[in-house]
Each structure stands twice: as C-alpha cells, then as structure tokens.
Image 1 (cartoon, rainbow, N blue to C red):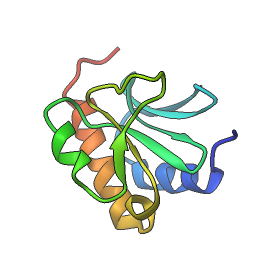
Image 2 (cartoon, rainbow, N blue to C red):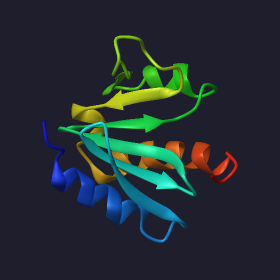
Image 3 (cartoon, rainbow, N blue to C red):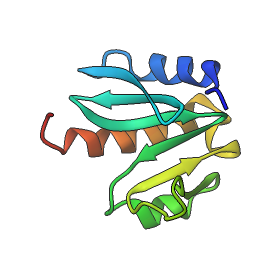
Length: 109
C-alpha cells in the first residue's frame, strides 16, 4: 500500500527547521530521520512514531495510538498512530515532538 502523501506533507511542514531531518523510503513507506535516527514514518494512512521505551506505555494510553506490530511482534518504543491521533495539526505535532525528542537523545549515526 502506498503511503499517504498528504500526511507526509504535513509531517514535512511540521519538521521543517528542526535540524538535520532527512527522508528515506523504508518498509514500503516513507521514514523521517533526525541525524540518522528514525523519528517517524508514514505507512498508508497511519504513522509510526519512535517515542522510546520510557514513553511507550503513556503513549499507548492516548486515543489513536496502538502498538506498532509490523512483524507480528510489537516493538517496544514504537507506536502506530491513526484516526483521531492525526486529525489535527496540533495532535500530529504532539506525536512528532515526542518522537523528535527521543531521536535527539540518541547519538548521531
């Protein structure tokens, strides 16, 4: 399934000016990287966000969030956001801020 280009545009706009953000086609979707570390990705009409293990449980309690289960095994620290979690630019920005904060805490690749 191709990724939602409008959602990718919203992410590009939100991450503009945030530092060394690049894009990479991955997993049939589009990933956004900060200094070589994944921030988030667009797959279909959903995004996956790397919030980190410390924020994982709290993130899952938020409407629109669910475990990222890409391989049949949920990945701790990665969540999928859909529906209500992406309806507004403010909601999207909240997820991106969490994911960007985690990516900034990692050493550059």
